[in-house]
Image (tube, rainbow, N blue to C red; front, side, top):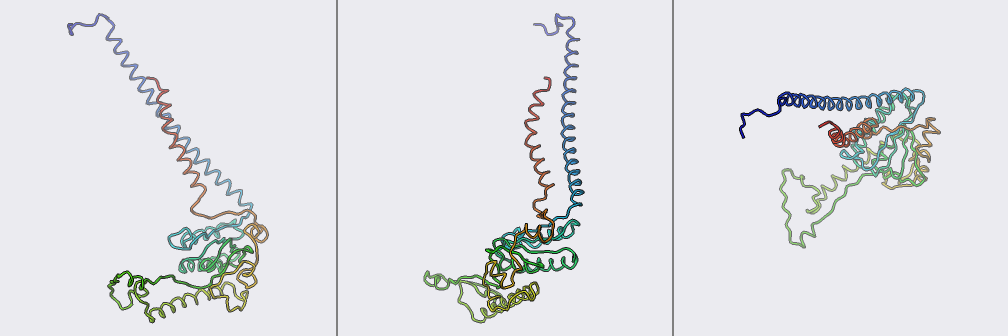
Length: 320
């Protein structure tokens, strides 16, 4: 076949040009549809954000007409690396007091204690906020457990409420350790410890106790205990009874704690909000669960999940 011979159809050039033009037109139309698609997605996203913003504003305007009880929760071990850390709790307390619709603040505690330093930071901040916002009362409500560092925080509140079966107290200080000296001897293991400083390895569980070091650390614990007692006396004042067991580290039920003056009355969060603060609506101030943030995250997740199927459907609907 001779390739130089033109096709038998005299209109082949025009047909070829027409096909090329239609292909270019289809490509432009497809690109335009994709542009419309992405602009629509952007519009929906911005519309959703605006709707959430307006909803938040309207909710705030409505809440101006109604006071609420602010709730800050302390759950679990009080430590720098847990949810019950001083930085987060203090930030939540500041937000609660700064809200102009706050009728009163409840700090609800369910904790076995923890770091005396973290508890001390929170205690100090409550006293500062009480002075700054003297017109806003703050009460502590105990759930199942409020001992040691948990109670260290609770006593900064103006009043403390608990359930009759709540466990309260443990006003003391402890340090746990073990001694493995005899076990090492029986196993024929030699302990090798290098230190710079005579007492750098004090209370090492693999070495025999030294009476001087034990005495020293007991004095350290006693000093922390004295601080704890002073904090309790400052917070509870004349309400606490003169009982020799009060600061011994014992734990009491809510009923027993009330008779000792460790708490003021039996009651729940709802009772305090409804009967005392006269603001039945309870608003939490947990910074880890901001409502708007959670809604936006949910919206983004849903859009991301829908995108692949939308692309497939749109691409299949486009002209080929």
